[in-house]
Each structure stands twice: as structure tokens, then as C-alpha cells.
Image 1: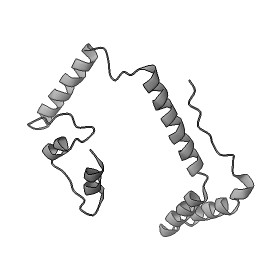
Image 2: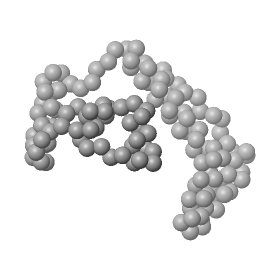
Image 3: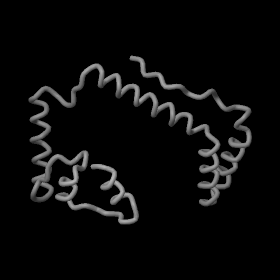
Image 4: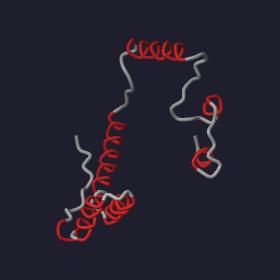
Length: 130
């Protein structure tokens, strides 16, 4: 969809495109517009699924693409695991629970953050083998 379109949607304009506009700007998950209502949409979805099944299944890619996707998944998983034991995350959880007057949970996160140097595990490293 491109950076300019993303900025229109996520930025101050908060643009919400119509289906036609979304298709025109290249929304990544929009392939077609089905005219009509729910019944027509469901009928088209069933037809698309039947076509894919008849063609032998869903998405397929070569070994290089599979390896690339595993590597990306491993990196994202490691980043997420490391984020859960970060000072910033614990501060955010403390603030979140304090604002919602969840004193026990807020205290838990305060203690977890205060003692983090004592128990913090080693950073998780991506492992994309398989």
C-alpha cells in the first residue's frame, strides 16, 4: 500500500478508505470487491475456498522463502521474549495497573522491575533452524 497511504490511515487524517479506494491503493489483503450483501460475500468466499482446494491447497513457496520466513519468525519471537523482561515493559505494566487501581498487580510489576538485575534471564537469541 505504500508509506504515503499508511500515513494517511495511521496519521492525523485517520483516513478510512472505501472498499474501492482500498483496492485502488493496493491494500495488501484485498483482492476483489464482492457486490451485494452478506449472502453474496459468503458465496464468493466458499467459491474461492473450493477453487483453492481443487488447485491443491493454499499458499506454497520454495525452500528459500520458507527459510526466510522461519528466520523472520525466530527474530520476532526472540524480540518479543526479550521485551517481556525489559525495564520498559515492566514500567508500562506498573503504570497500566496503577491507573486501573489494580494495586496487587502494580506492586507485582514494581517488585519485578526492582529485582530485575537479580533474576533477569539471558537474552533470547533467534534460532531459525528446522
